[in-house]
Image (tube, rainbow, N blue to C red):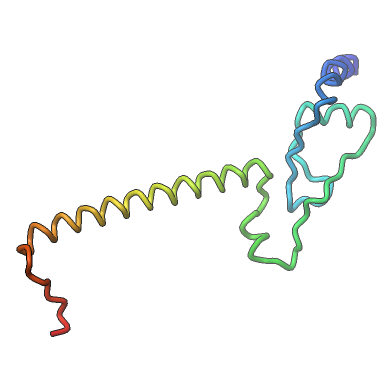
Length: 117
């Protein structure tokens, strides 16, 4: 118990600037990822609750979130954005190569046949 008290006392000064709480959206109002900052609340017997809850009837959102925490979902969003940017770059490169190939294949001044003739 003394170790925990010393740990909490060392954390108190940093709490004046806020506290990082990582909620778990499908674990109810007390569902959070445990961090050292939460030891303060545990030692004092204070239950920490949050209001970031999902509507259990929203099956699509609940299935997408699953048991992920806030931080895990942010990582998913970042990876999704990075993947979208990579796909856009590849599409631009492909379009550019198609244009070059078309210029090489079709002599200048001639139309390409589309198959609608």
